[in-house]
View 1 (cartoon, rainbow, N blue to C red):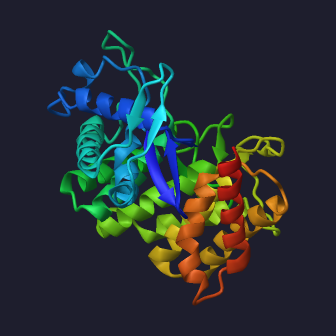
View 2 (view 1 turned 135 degrees about the vertical axis):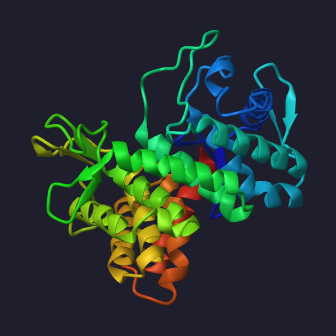
Length: 347
């Protein structure tokens, strides 16, 4: 679970972003505190079996507290009624800071020596689910990077580097055209993808976000060349109007009837991260076109979907739009963000 604050809006995610309630914050903080009994990476599979949940929950307070602790400190105490009518107050800055620390140590321990995270375990047993979501793996790297950016943490960087190596070795393979690399949905076989595999835009988009963060934290561990190859595949999926093909089949090509709300925003954020790494304006234009398309396609709607990745990307893009061409106008980006905020208040 993580909470973020973009353009003045507080949001929550379990790998994806969902509406937040103070009850959920309080309950999640309590779970984090209980998980703090796990002392080492080696013990993680033996003693984390009391919770059956993906590790995406514990993106939690690393993103959560890092961005809203200041707002809580300056705001009045806010409460919401739980199902039994009990009023639950917002956590204090000290509680948020504690939850950040607990979440960080959990995520660092949950990343094994091979770079793979403990993703999901069954309640009351030591059984670890064989399923694995590589997009949430990338999101975990992003959360660790945000932590390190706010509070330098060598253990977080070490986990990021291990997790990035796992991603590269097991999921990143050649693209469909020369000069491309792709985050495939299934583990590679002998370094190559299978004919029944597919690539999702969000996988490559968040892969760019995650690996660019690793490059920033430890440049020698991640090449810009590979980031650019991933960027070329994401641009290959982008149409002239800024929209995207969201899924690509290794066997049949574009999957035109399959879309994800979050993928364009994730891709836009990835383009911006790549621009920050190599300073090529082509990536900034691609990000702006993606966000401009979303803004235009939703203009005039009374309600808009809770597309939080697009808001995160918008917040990152706006400062660049003030001094360099970015493929979108500041006015349409701000209006889109306001439109979402107003829609959320009505809901």
